[in-house]
Length: 351
Image 1: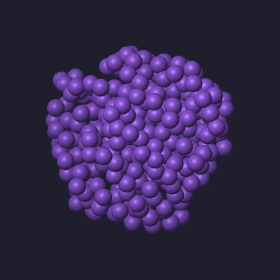
Image 2: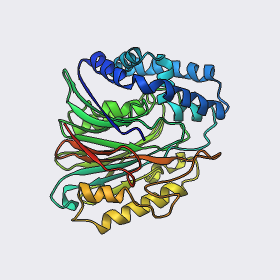
Image 3: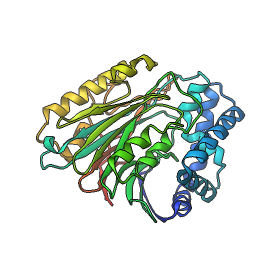
């Protein structure tokens, strides 16, 4: 694994995108090559993928102008094609819309309210499961936008998967869902960036169900004053789940009864991880901390369907855990394991 890269950025959206693009220039070429190879293995022509990317980009530019500006500046600074970068960030949408989804990227997300932690800290945690085609470079973006909340957030491999916390006390993580009502629209990964722009809980929640979205996703959002909501989103519908004072785990299947009719795919892997994580959280209630969550993210029960997942790349293209994340929402800081959490130490990066 390449280790943790910390990217400092500030200014308007173009300046922030340029700083990130310069930092990612060494890896984006390889990341896009791997992405093209995965599409080819799925029988998707590169021209077809770029045509879809152009449509996604049109919706992004028409609805999320600041994120689009960051993306364009990032592509220019890194010297890569803008639609190739959009396609990289829209792998699931591309596979779904062409009906060639052969494997899904998983992930496990956790939330700990103040009442369940050892010292009243509000915590989020996440294991990032990725397909073998994804570039393994893990990075933290610590940014101070000119007129929006500063944030510190995690991503990897050229993705806009910015999971972290902003200075307004909005913390964000999430995980993939697979629903049948996908369509052309704004790819889901860009909505993580929009959540970090929010100054209020309401604005963060609304960002996750942007009406012009292409796809579903799960967003787990917490605030520094202790509110925790899980937002399950499909292409056209959404549902809110409230954690209250109980720890909460979510993986890659829909929990809201009204959304289950849109579920697609075998969810046994997700169910095993969710139940295991929920039980471990409940066992630790009252003693949960950044340290205990880091240990939970290293759990190997039910392998290869574990929270910390180890799967050798093969013809089934199963995902494996490539990074771990713990977010101290109260303290505006994140802990990142730049590799499988069981093999590397977590590093703390504060805002």
